[in-house]
Image 1 (cartoon, helix red, strand yellow):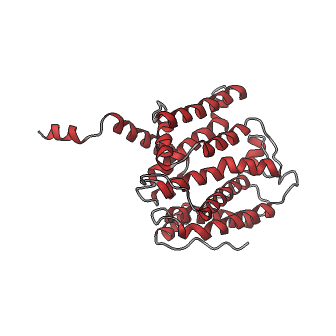
Image 2 (cartoon, rainbow, N blue to C red; image 1 turned 135 degrees about the vertical axis):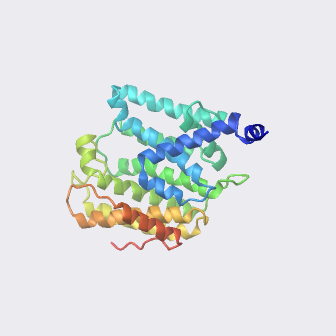
Image 3 (cartoon, rainbow, N blue to C red; image 1 turned 90 degrees about the vertical axis):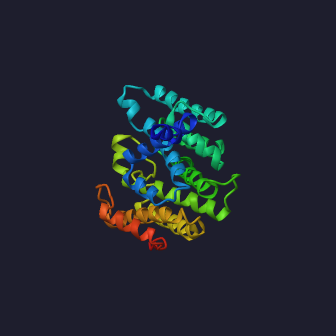
Length: 295
């Protein structure tokens, strides 16, 4: 009898497939980003799997254009086709509610529940595709790239924060939309500064124009800090089960910005020690407000 009862309570069919997809997405995040994995653990049970599902698809697409395809022997044109196929499969999964690609399946479930549509997905893939062709960005192409690669990801997460578990997706408030975009932009520009040398030498890309003299490092840091301040102002308006995670992420990148300012023109990659990350997470978990940014 105990065996029968256990069999009856175990998930089967689509429920089991959905769980497997969510688990696959979570594993992708664990392997690729310890910092993001830590922040996700601060999310409540309602939004947590959905945010993981978003970032898993984002990470897979990013990996397509950032090296593994080339390491597997694919040329640029074939890599572009792989990315096109991933985008097309994402749209098919949105329509059908199913994909044989577990990461895409997990993302599509999140998108359908939380109101993430092609208006947010297409710009992301456009930015990823840009990495296969563009090497040097000007102000206009930088802004377009950051919108697609980072701001829309923030907007996807905002859709989750507002709509996960709701009977019908709602449009987030305008101030939250602005905060999500600016937090995403700050994250991306911080990463551009951290990876300046690798992007230039390893990937042949210049996202910021620092090396070409279009802007200075301080110009970029001032922009990052302004974006972080704007984002911090709206974090208190987020649902309670999302605030600690977003605060921790904000504070981590604020710490990176401070370290980038302090290092001057050193080419060493800036990072935050694990002990400091844990302290930031604890601070956010205790409900402390986002760290104040002073340029």
